[in-house]
Length: 275
Ligand SMILES: [Zn+2]
Image 1 (cartoon, rainbow, N blue to C red):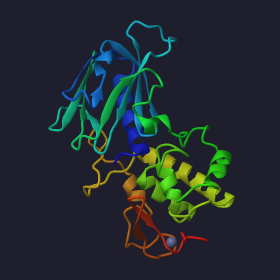
Image 2: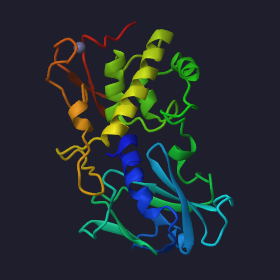
Image 3: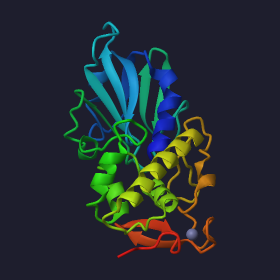
Image 4: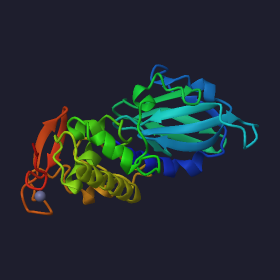
């Protein structure tokens, strides 16, 4: 499943193709999945931003001045397998026509969603509405994180809720906890642990965004950058997907458990569960 770095990589790649363009039409045959898209017809894409794993296209009237605030947002959630392509494929679900060209949204598993809403009206998307700060923004502060982590339940489940920080999914939660030497089921983090985890999340997310996100070839997910190139981050995983392989710090075999219904990878020696 695409996580924050993959979505950010996609955003950066399609931004030069879309920013400033007027949407001529959005073509699809599933109005319950791609909601209210006709409201975007004739609107100009002023900016492309991201919140967690959601991409937000800011739309304004085609002739609106630059300093007029956007009047609509086109929200794109990539789901498990969504991505943009320059050419139409067998799994193309949506085609976005602009005056400058055409982009296709491919999504073999069909969990991707689009919606056009008024700015900030995310009631139909509860995860987006309740989302915590971006991991690489100044709004994500160590002080707030340490305070909240003192009362967290199983720390990995808490991270996956997107409330303490947005965009940290299964892969990056495992990687951050390995780096911070914290057991995924640990509750009530001590300040020193929470500080290590805060720094680890920032480092893991920064590295992953720089590397262009992960790409899994084993059927778990099949994210590819929209030009067909795979992300490179999978070569940097220390815990995720490495069960049975030696921990790079201590040589103990990485173990896999299920926590909050998600496969969870950790080093039983470096990441001890404390009482
Ligand atoms: Zn270890």
